[in-house]
Length: 580
Image 1 (cartoon, rainbow, N blue to C red):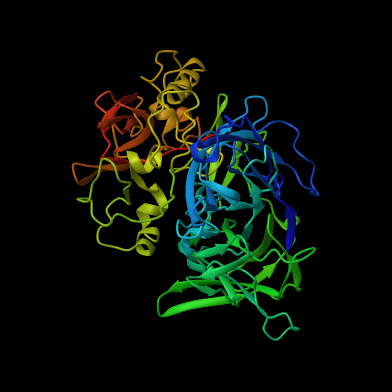
Image 2: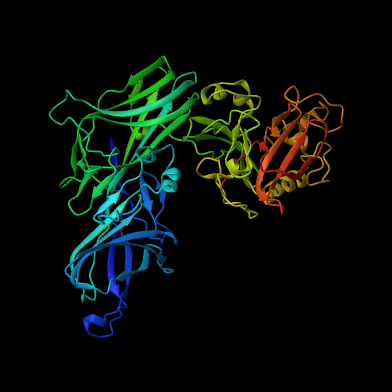
């Protein structure tokens, strides 16, 4: 079990400044707005420290470390518990928004309102992330739902806001002008990487599990609390409703019917509430990894050997690496395999591993851009009917598949060859329209890649035309004569006699000379699938002025040019991703 300190442990030093106190008697005392300064300070770590200011409390991978940054708009919940001037216990919760320091983005400030009727002292509890502080008892933090702790990439954990940081300050005198508190971690990150080293796709992976060795030594249970729904900040223990939570025998990571291709790398991520322990941490038992795959009624589960017992604590990232050849699962060292990120070599081509679902993609450099050579296959759910359309909800289709489940859709010939058809909302993953270069919209693409804007498509067309990738070697364009250079040609494309068209075998030296390798995957529009083998459609990130349509690129079997026009966002088309 590899361990690394998280690169920036948010130990936030708070300084109360700017107090407003007019010296009036208590009965006329006004509420005070207190500005708190929060500074992200680094704790000891084994990898080199970052020295440049960062941008947010979000999660970004940095080798084995995970960096946490402030982000404008981040919110913190504050709970105040005090006895008022009538000797009644009062409990209040307020939410405040941070303002990031323009000189140092690890530093932020926010205001807290101190009630006017505090008798002498008050307790202050702070929480970042999760589902907030309990209004009945602000000393208790509400944890996310169990399934929200797990994902296949770090960005999804960020979007779910599952990472929780907290602080407490007790018995604060109401007249204290300044004091400091430290944010602490409530849990740690866990990442499992599994590489398929076999010679075939591993079909229908549904679960990965870290499980304890109940027979090995005296340390038998895992001090992780994903099943809990509360954390007692004052006394530092987890609860399930009103009962103190027990340790567990295993931690399971669900997989959404994954088909992991040969040499594909699959990631399982979690942020888990864990016991901090004393010194180096709490005792963890020897662990093994199991992978479950197959269809219901015919599943297979294989296991690694056990890793030795360890200490583990909060505020760290724990990494597990394994290889899976279809019949044997083995723990390995980090150096045993790399995760290709699509970077091209001297030949101008590369390989990208999408660790969200175990797929691999060929990549190619076109000018200064690096593109996928294949249509995106990321399929978190399947929309079972082409009549199920939406302008605002994400919809995912596989050409010609209706009334089938996710596993069957991923096992279909059209999925394997043409990938997924996304409505615009799914392609964008809910992001707003972007006309910039780059678009900065990850959308449905893997981390480190994004959906291209119209301008990025234009840059590719201009490059290909100016460098005479056109079927006739001219510089006429930028799009009127480069369809053949982008498409795979016959027999993937329907036959055509049109000069320079993808379906014509003329100008054979220009067929797919760009290595973009466009396939005629058709689309779904007007609640019907159409144009398989005759047309390819690709979304851009820019919506049309009508707001119900967005721009696309289209390649047709019988035309030498590539067109750009708009389609309804309810339509479903292919996505090609471009490297950040």
